[in-house]
Length: 298
Image (cartoon, rainbow, N blue to C red):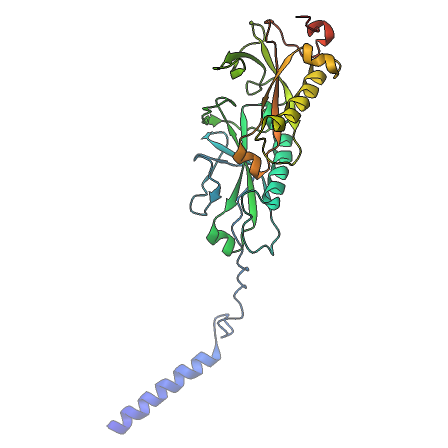
């Protein structure tokens, strides 16, 4: 009986083995050669042309990256994503040549994105970098982010906006800086500029941006002189008057450079305003010429 069972078991095993060899239902028996190769691992890179509901952050982690449609409420819009050299071992330090170069690229890209120098509007440009772990994993990007502000004066707040900034400064725009009314400080100078309609009485107007050379942030009175000289030239072109010694007697000038921290990362754009310290007007002085901005005799 035992011999019969053994013979029966051996016959069954042989049948199974023969069946396995006879047909595979379309399989070739190799469990690995038909699998597609996995793609190589790549580092995270954010996208341009998307927005973020959260406030701007100088360092962006993958976990914090949550892009949203710019048509909905948001605080930040990414206008460009650039890259540092792949062989760079560590993120560039604040104030480094590399970071200033990244800001310059972002500056150019942002202005093209909105249709004019972004400083002509209530906007702030910032550069975000990967986190330390992201850099170690191979991320080498830098992100160019624009934010709308309530004002470009002190105490500015971020605006939660809906709609992209693409082309926002082409032509007439509520974002544009224009005519202003000055508010005096403790001394005789201008403390604050308040936006007003050009048809109402005002004594100041945004005239453009002067690009300061790559030099240390102004610390002494003598360091500020080139900023005033540069802005007077911008003023002359805006109004259409000669950039000569008489320009000093036609109008005052208010300069608004970026803060020291932004200067270190490469922002060299100085906002320039004409200032009529002795009178007010009820129209823009753009292109007004010598008749609109006469030499003052007193």
